[in-house]
Length: 124
Image (cartoon, rainbow, N blue to C red; front, side, top):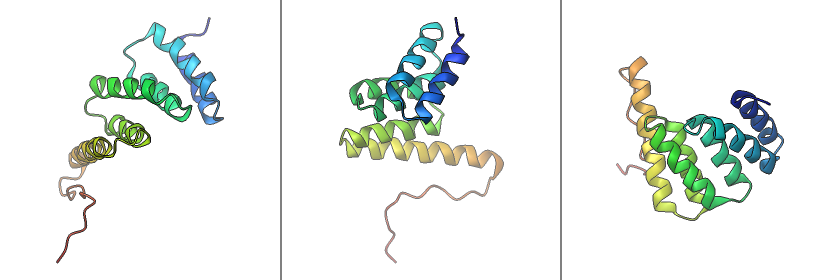
């Protein structure tokens, strides 16, 4: 029987081939053994999103942001799913959180990093 890491890798292989249903199955099997594995849960959410299971994807991606609250990619993935659900204001909020987290990480190695852009043009 494959271990969770092997199942996760198999899911990534399926995902890369756009075999989303097979990826979802592999990730679910991995998560049965390690239910709090945020990377695998995020991969599951993205496979569900691309496979059209938007509501299930949203639940899983929201859970990822709880398990990994400092991970910019978690909020970026959540934003993508929210966009597909046409929840634009929520998507923008999630993406702003991702930008802020990314900037905070950048500050650790580059204390002079400029703050993230709001995406709103500044009039002079």
